[in-house]
Image (tube, rainbow, N blue to C red):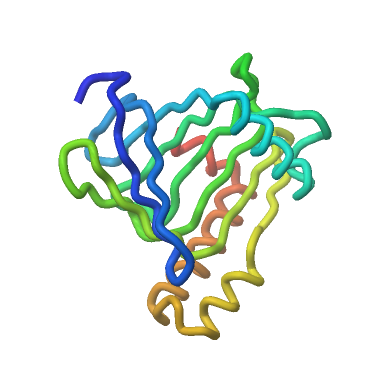
Length: 170
């Protein structure tokens, strides 16, 4: 693949939906796939409003760019939310099964409901424990997947405190 070509990411939220993201290809190597997306105005506004409603960014902020890293051996991804000028709004990770390559330019990730948001000042928020517990209780994810999600959350919290996450992965 060449830089700037489009890749497709099938993003599965068990028991809920499968969404297909089309993103600009940056690089692919053994540890990860990196993509880039400049958001259209309507998506930028909607995403900014969603982040404001969750208390993740200040009122009026918009996400102009998302740089994503999908790992083949790590149980999370790493998204860098940026303003249109490239300045950082925050880091976000979906905890899930490592991404798999389906074919040339097509990949798949299964989300395990837990997420984290890291503010530029280093504060970390653990997100979506309620959805995770619903998925566990409803047997939407397996006990092994649930343990992987819990373990990964503990690891990210620990690595953040030690200054490892997200910098080791960017």
